[in-house]
Length: 245
Image (cartoon, rainbow, N blue to C red; front, side, top):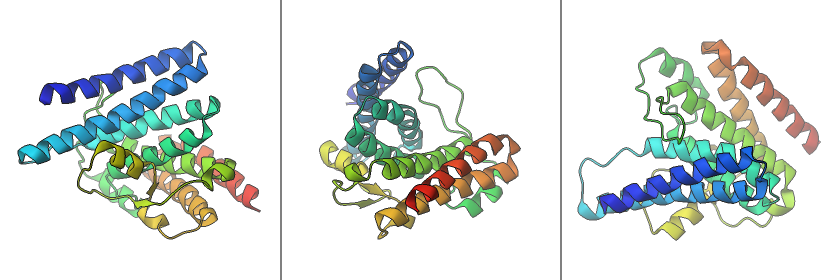
């Protein structure tokens, strides 16, 4: 089983590498499909690994936060490509997977007020799962990824309300026991963040975008190099507010 689990991770990394190469070559449709394969493969890898440990009662259980961060990272990179390939329904579905993964990998738990105290301490970096970059993932990058994922989801929800109207039920994001992959994938594609639970679509959009900007604002207060990201996030929030009237 361990060998099969490792193969799943290699499939995810190979798909990510291929997606980048196809996008660089201008083959957007095929790149979008490769990104989708990569996203699904990362989620499958985490699912298979967790279920294997559960069945064998392995203790302590492996921390899969690096996989969650990688799943969010490939989603943030790939969803705009999937969108450009006119796969809007899948862009929204994978954006929700990205949103959930990035939130679960965020060391602050999505609370901007936790950013300053956390970054002033010593938070160990995560191993990076990426086909090209082996440098570890620092805490601020995990926080920025969660903020960016919120803004990406808010933008897509604003841009494609008709696709959004066809979405099904919701899964309040949390660390739950693993289930068969098809159900796990459905769960991630229906993710709603704890702070957005029970909100209507317009309110969820405003909450996601606002929380994304607040995250970048706190990051910038501690690490000024995030100013460009904060400016971009602020512009995105203003565009969303203008579109909602």
